[in-house]
Amino acid sequence: MNAAFGDLAALAGTVFLLLLFTRAAWHKTLEFDRFAGYVADYRVLPVALARPAAALAAGAEALTVGALVVPGTSAAGAAAAAALLLGYGLAMGVNVARGRRHIDCGCGGARQAVSWWLVMRNAALAGLGAVLAQRAPGAFSTTETALAIAGGFLCWLVYELAAYSLANWQKLAPPTGATDLPH
Image (cartoon, rainbow, N blue to C red; front, side, top):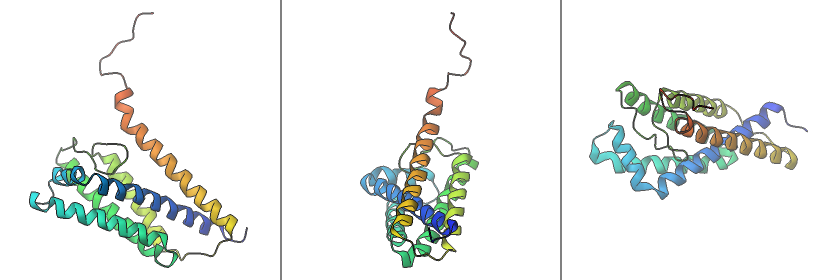
């Protein structure tokens, strides 16, 4: 292999963000009315601006995906991903601080209510985007590219599985005050 490990990790991270934002943009576009409802539920904008803000978010995510795909604009795409994730995290944090924890995050994928955990997740993902925005794309062999793409896909798959597991955790946990059944 000719590429440095950091370069391959950066490409894998870019693939991860690409998949994350592809799924998010797809969700926001296909279920636009539902997503606009989530935006309205956040109550950080006047209700009249919920649909335009939802359209802006979906469009920004689609542009981010496009930028991440093109090697010459992938750093800008990573920076856009970081900015979007920070904005979403801020909106979540405002609502958690208000005590409004019943709101669906509207992220796509596993349905999750806003929480400090999701705020921290968004901050961590924004950090990844910020790091990737500072890296110049490298030149890779076909094998290196395939390895990095597989690594990014695997990271995304683990992320998605973890998100669904966490979303269902409370459904699987016994109710508070439950006792063991007799043997």
